[in-house]
Amino acid sequence: MNYPSFEEILDLQYKLAEYRKQYWIEHDLFTWQWWLLLLIFIVPWIIWYKVIPKEKKTECLSYGLLLAVLASQLDELGINSGAWAYSYQLTQLNRGLNPYNFSFIPVAYMIAYYYFPKWKHFILANVGIAILAAFVTEPILTQMGIYKTFYWKSIYSFPIYILLPIIFRFLMYYMLEKNKSKNAT
Image (cartoon, rainbow, N blue to C red; front, side, top):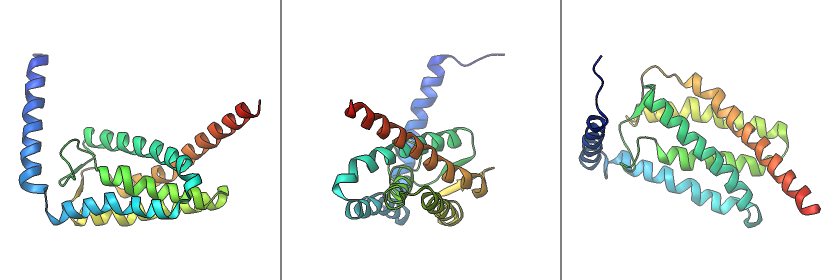
């Protein structure tokens, strides 16, 4: 079997990056979908700023950033495996849906993290967010032509939307408790 050289792969990556840039400028930039993505990116952070008290912003932000990084990586995994793609982007810098990964999802979960300190209520809030994200937001983004699935179904997203915030809450509580015990000594 004849494998491509590293230089051939780099050349294809360069061409693909140029094609994506041209596509984004001519197809995405300043369309109504682009403006919607901009709103999806900005509005949740305005809400977050107003509803999370100053003394809790650092803790909530740490929790949300953990979720955002993982959401972004899972998004990239889905794109690379051919499960889905995005025909509109806020920027052409990567292929993931940044407004969703770095704003909508983490902000929703940060608000739940703050307002539902009891595990039972936190889990119920996460189920509500998961229903909204998997069965409302994803289909709407599909109808708008922003999100295109190939073999992925919203039902696959649902448990992920529930489990990730729970895992990260355990992690945050563990780190906070460890920090408290460290400061107490």
